[in-house]
Amino acid sequence: MKNQEKMALPLGTVQEAKKDSVYCDPNKGRAGMPEIYQFLLSLGVTPNYLGFHYTAYALSLCMNEPQRLLYVTKEVYPDVAERFGTTPQSVERNIRTAIYLAWEKNGAFLEKISHHVWTKRPATSEFLGMIFAYFVYGTVEEKE
Image (cartoon, rainbow, N blue to C red; front, side, top):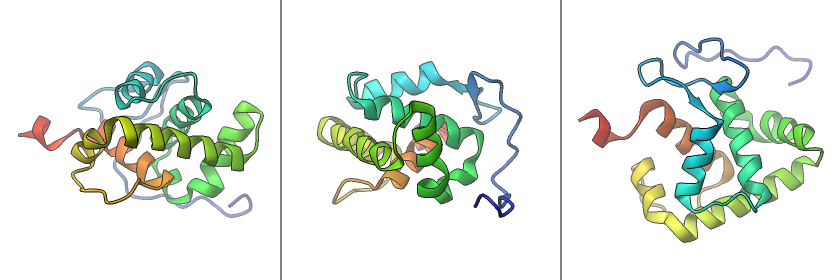
């Protein structure tokens, strides 16, 4: 999409994010990197895996620009790779490792936040999407 104009989606009001914070529902406040790190830790993904850092940065990119969730391979992996000085293929592989860890250690929690019974591990775009939705919209229990 380098030469094409990015498609703006009606995903709600995306406010201008500060440098160290990411977009989240204005009624719930902003979720910064510390909140994303804490969430990944609660899933069982630890900082000694590159996927921890790549996933956290990918989530921050998606929270700032939700339309990136539609083009994970073309818009998220290359930007994460550039930030960390690696390749998009390495980013994808390491995020898949983070998903594997989360699935093995806390699969029930993933099902709870996504309100979906998974028969297999979620794909990277599904994983990023479910965490994005959790930060932006919360859970059903919080809204009741």
